[in-house]
Amino acid sequence: MDLTIERGEIFAVLGPNGGGKTTLFRVLSTLIPLQEGQVQIAGCDLRRGAAEIRARIGVVFQAPSLDRKLTVAENIDIQGALYGLAGRDLAARRDMLLAQFGLADRARELTEKLSGGLRRRVELAKGLIHEPELLLLDEPSTGLDPAARSDLWRYLKSLRDERGTTVILTTHFLDEADGADRIAILNEGRLVALGRPDDLRAEVGGDSITIETLSPTQLATAIHEKFGVVAKVVDASVRLEVPAGHEWIARLVEAFPGQISAIRLGKPTLEDVFIARTGHRFWREQQGPEA
Image 1 (cartoon, one colour):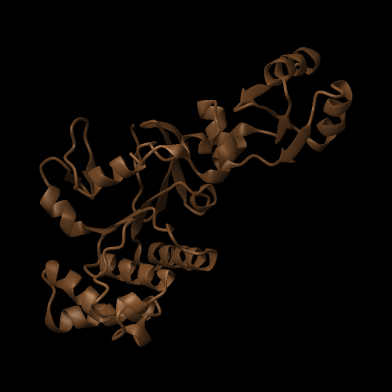
Image 2 (cartoon, rainbow, N blue to C red):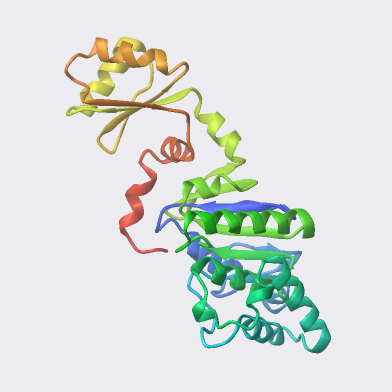
């Protein structure tokens, strides 16, 4: 893997479970040592400057890290104290974050009484109390409903636009990665795609057609021989990318009567990018444990 993440961008690391996202997250957040290669964060070498890096990054883990028996303000204050903040400076930063994340009226409320979306806001406030240059988030939308996920992304974009904070997040949600400035797609520990979402989709080209059939290999071969287009077998379905896909639906059904049980047309998605780079569907890997 070789990539550069620019200062002040939202960068998503996308991949199925087992793709290597969490391992990368643990390396970047200094939780596990770098075994080989080189990583620089904010100009600091990860091998020699882990302590300095920890002071310059904020981390929000996938698993909740709040003390449910403490109030919202107390959770944030403890995090600030761990970074050497105290007194008026800590109080000013805490109150600013509470206001920014719409938590000012919840400051004295126990976190165990908050909804999942509100608790995620507190987690973000904790990670930002020391004003980090880089915010690392591991699967930040886990357990959030669609409204809370939308709120989360609004906050992340405001951090980028108003503070210039760099945000790196891991996710296995294809639609969530679409909101990032750039994405890296991982599969089995390898970087298989890197770029802006629109640019990656444009590389696929044309419309995406998925065909369900009892004999995918034979049908894919027949489509290639008859029309000269590349048809791939992906997890027991036939997929092809063609311009003006709507014109191909009737053409394919008429050319292969009785062989097509279902056919779907869509614009290229990030899953199409993943399939083009790996040869299999994104969700095929989801049965295994995260790596």
